[in-house]
Image: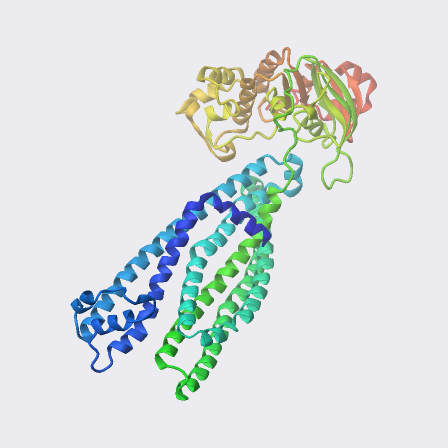
Length: 612
């Protein structure tokens, strides 16, 4: 529960709302307390034979004690006489108190919910900001859907706990305190006897709350699995349908859903037993208290009206305990979500964003990998193994090798998507871990095989990361990427909406938009990870001409799978099992490297071999 109270403290940002909300909660409960005090003893007194009504009642209450002299004799004499008029004015007064109490209750709920929703919005924003600043290594190891579940599901569960604490529990607690105060003022001995019940109730609530919290944490983790299964199946819908695995995916989702249900049923049992158990203990206690009180009344040691007032007050106080039990369970349930959120926010952020770090000047001399090694979290072997390469500024270097040999991983070290476990990456002789990441990545353009587009317009996707780009610059970049023709053929041109994941466009169209995005960035270092793999041969030739021109005076690193790309490189690096096995030109490697000979024969594709 420490995590829950940690987040609850953040609601102090809205202290004014909290203070006024508490005041209105007390006023609402105060109106109810006044009703308890007035109803039973006042009505009993007024309805006695020969009672004059309000004048006599006022005289009795102002003749001694704290109310002595509070009302003048002239005012008392002007009050209407008769029991009926007295009861009528009392009911009118209670009606006014009820209206005021209802207004106070509304204001309390309004202010409390305002604080809760603002706090949750702030926590959700912090959680998302933390996730996007986490190292990619962390996201890869834990999975993005778990982070999404914490941002969406866990903040919602935490909000339920805040609502229970501020909106509901305060109202119930203040109501119970006022009712208990009435009982203590009326007859403190009976009230003290009833309070002996509290330790028993506290133990019951604590035991059930712990069970609910444990089950809630497991349910939240399982619910993240639901997100993962649903996201994978829906994003890979084409693969699912082609391979006719609908039944398998439904079964996988059903298995996880069954686990979620199991945890929720455990919560159900604890929550269901809490209310009846507390109610049973309360009723038995009040029953025992009633028997004792009746004996005292019969023996003449207790006034009947006092007992009735105490009994009503204790009944209201007891009635407030039952909903408080449910609210405590709500808070315990949200405590599990708070624990998960706190663990997320305590994760180490991606290094290199410190303002005190120096900026990297625009790349102009060299890019070097110096004895670089890297292993993925949970991996059994190194994805990159002791790689050392020196690349001159403006040089185009192609990386080839069997699938899974570490080409993409090696190039991911340049923009610091990952940091090497051993060795260094140097740009112009400067270790990139010693400069600000933002200044490094601003001069790197990346086009990958798996194009990522965002929901929005084509214009917004080309300008992604370049908010100050003009329309002329965007259109020029699209023209260079050979995307202008298909964009102009669309009804809305550059303002055409792009669906989620860019699924409203073909693979080749998505790839050309990604290339236009990189061109607009004007990078000093260009990384092309099989950038033309999604376009046909004709489009590849056009894009190849653009890239060959665009790559002039830029350091270009290419993961290649087509022979034309390899032939256009200044140098070729052959990799296998994470290590560099050979470097040289195409002709040199054909003569000296058996692995490259095999790749050139079977893996590197020419236009003639794959004209589509």
